[in-house]
Image 1: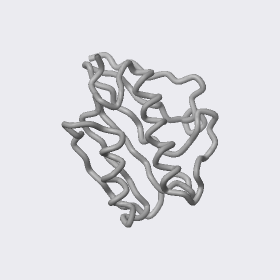
Image 2: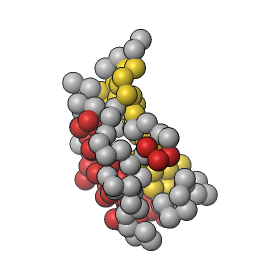
Image 3: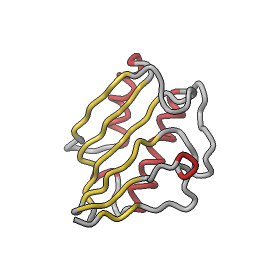
Image 4: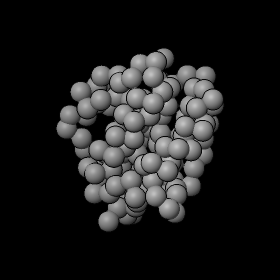
Length: 128
């Protein structure tokens, strides 16, 4: 099996020595994405809704670079720093994904890589 890295330009994850993801056997495996803009700036500090939108836009950008999109996502793992946002996540699934919805695991964590982050999503998608 050969794995091909997903390349972004600019790559906001490069300073952290993280690959955006890899393509292997017709699947895209994405690293955790958060509210970090293309230029590497944090988005929506203190605002869950803005962070969630920026996170999904980041996922969308990386999937496009892999030759895929959100409609091909088959599994997500969502990390929240506060499970009080669970109902918002349910609404976001309906906004960003379509039926059949991806398999999903949601986990509350004490913190993410940067203390300002409130949500992080990793994904697996098929590649056309």
